[in-house]
Image 1 (tube, helix red, strand yellow):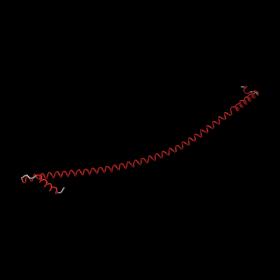
Image 2 (spheres, helix red, strand yellow; image 1 turned 45 degrees about the vertical axis):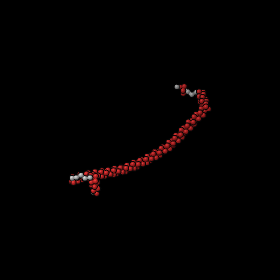
Image 3 (cartoon, rainbow, N blue to C red; image 1 turned 180 degrees about the vertical axis):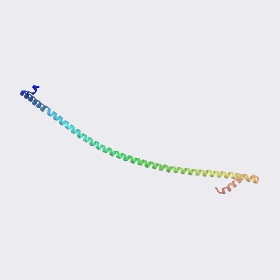
Image 4 (cartoon, rainbow, N blue to C red; image 1 turned 135 degrees about the vertical axis):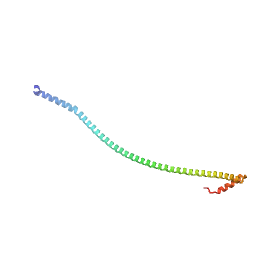
Length: 164
């Protein structure tokens, strides 16, 4: 420990000489590469910051654009839904009208069929009445009449009767 505290002037001169030589070598050969390295690092950091800012601004623009597209899509979707509702209501209305038309047609057809059946039944009833009248007249007169001639005569009288 004593040697550490003793200062020898020769050792100090050699130490300073070695220090200045190393300092000169570092300044001569090391300062430029270090400065260039620091400058290139600074430039790369600046470029990275600029690139990040540019990417951030692009991302903000894309975000705004996507939000606008989303709003447009939502409004289009609302319009499509509204149009679908209107079309559905129109289809329901048309279906109701068509059903009413079909119902009316069926009722008319049924009324016509009832009228045809009624007319056929009345015609059949008249035939039967004419046959019964001819038969009754034959029994009353107790003689055979010309069936066709008298049948036509009775038919003409029955035609004159009210149709109810």
